[in-house]
Amino acid sequence: MVARVGRTVLVVEDDFSSLEVLVLLMRGAGLDVVSASDGEEAWAKLIAEPGIAIVVTDYMMPRLDGVGLCKRMQADPRFSALPVILMSATLRDRIENVPQVVSVFVKPLLFDDLLAKVQSVLAKLAKGEPET
Amino acid sequence: MSEPTHETHEPIVTERLSTGVQGFDVVVGGGLFRGAIYLVMGRPGTGKTTFGNQLCFSHAREGGRAVYVTLLAESHASMLKNLRAMTFFDPEIVNHGVSYVGAYKALRDDRLKGLLNTLRRVIQDEKASLLVLDGIAPTRAMAESDTALKEFIVELQVLGSMTNCATVLLANMTSADANGPEHTMVDGLVELAFERTSRRTYRTVEVIKFRGSGHMLGRHEIDITSAGLVVHPRTEDLLDAHLESHPQTRVPVGVPQLDEMLGGGLLSGTTTVALGFSGSGKTTLALQYLAAGCDAGQNALYFGFYEPPSYVLTTAEQLGLGLREHAARGRFGIVWQPSYEYGIDALLERLLREVRERGVRRVVIDGFDGVRLAAADPERTIRVVSAITNELRALDVTTFITDETLSPYGPEIATRVEAVSALFENLILLEYMTVGTELRRLISILKQRSSGHAMSVREFHLTSHGMQIADDAASAEEILSGFNVFGGKHLRRSRSSIV
Image 1 (cartoon, helix red, strand yellow):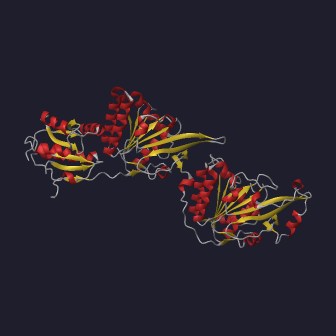
Image 2 (cartoon, rainbow over the protein chains, first blue to last red; image 1 turned 120 degrees about the vertical axis):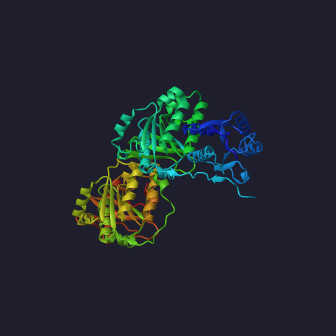
Image 3 (cartoon, rainbow over the protein chains, first blue to last red; image 1 turned 90 degrees about the horizontal axis):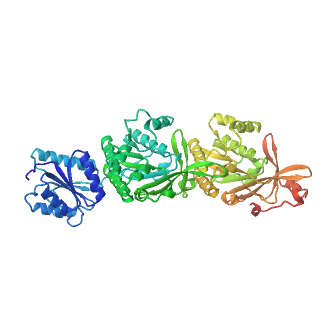
């Protein structure tokens, strides 16, 4: 994997309130955050925002879901190395072997755990270490 | 299928946190849920602020961190000053487990978004696991629309869930006003209220909604004491109706002729009511019953409303009963309270606690009317007493209750509580008769469930050695055939004449 330069977190969530709160909490924790409410909007943000270093996305979303977003990123060399954290309320068998996915958080999740994972990924990226 | 390369974080397990409010966790089946949001409403004076602070201090004492956020409310200094009288208050915990934050400026300047961000900040900064927001009314007033308020509530709910922080909103309103988004969207709705009867004013709590757990319906009486709120769950809902039974033995009453009339004594675990007018000898018989138990090595309890402990012990002493000595040895106890002091649930909670703690096998409730007067809702009296007698039976306690009849003479025997005859296993009637100008006393057993008993009426006397019952029915026969009685009527009566 090739590390991208940047510290921005792209948060993708179709549930309005969850998205608002996640963004609020992440900004409160000192992170740069951009947000999108589905996979299609996230794809547009990825193209438009050069500093995105990690994607935190919901699985079930309208138009383009989280796994669909991952597959589209995988097919594009600009984003194929971008780590993804998936949030899901569903079972995890359908998201096996999506290479970008470094972690799956089954909801309800604890923000501190999610934040710790995001910060750990960002720290490794900053050191140029691959995220596995 | 190959193994996934990612790690998986399981969903958080929703834990419950104890409120520290005695009895409340019982009503909600085990405390508040971490990450859930609750609305506690009530008019001023119903105990919302005490409840909120009690939660905070209890939570901090158990190692959690609580934040009490005020909007347009009394100053923190004033609140803390008032809290100092409460035993749950601990100044050492303030700012080291319980923090007080004013958020009105954020609400006024940036409306609901500003307030939400402030709450987010205090939760993150303080690592709070309990948040109390005192004053939903200013939040509602500053909301641009109902939708904005709804968004705020949902976001607060999500914030609590993601940070595993229980949120309690305190609102100065009643369930009659409970039609806003804050009522429909929260995980739990609790109402604190005042209730008034002709006899007394009391506080209640009602859990209207509680997601994730069964809860006890209806209004439960509460007291605000120096220890904070104390909830008395409704006795009939609290006590298990399916209880184990014990093998029954005969329990001597302490009056040999009465034991003979009963077939050897009362059956253990049963409840007996001694019915009679004032002065008919109910308390004397009750004291003899208690003394007989203590003499036989059983722990006994007098639970009364009218005779203070010193009077009870002196009366027993005058009858030659050794209850004072038994009391000194811890075998005999007296619990006395004025009849208006407690609600019925608090009262019977007290009775059960004493019975359990003292290992009591014989209990006397001297004055069923005291229990009746404690019930704000008279319709509950029978249900509550039935639940208590079931519980006492399960504890193998043999209960003796005195109940005053409304008149000294027949032909009808009226009591203040309906259905007394159906409620209890055994009924003993003590009554007066006039023969010429002389008052005479008679005793009869109207009922002893699951056992035969003497069907004859006997005369008895109250002497310096207690109740002395005639060995046979001869003197009672003379009295009852004398015809010189109230209204000139013959006073033979049947069980069905109890009303």
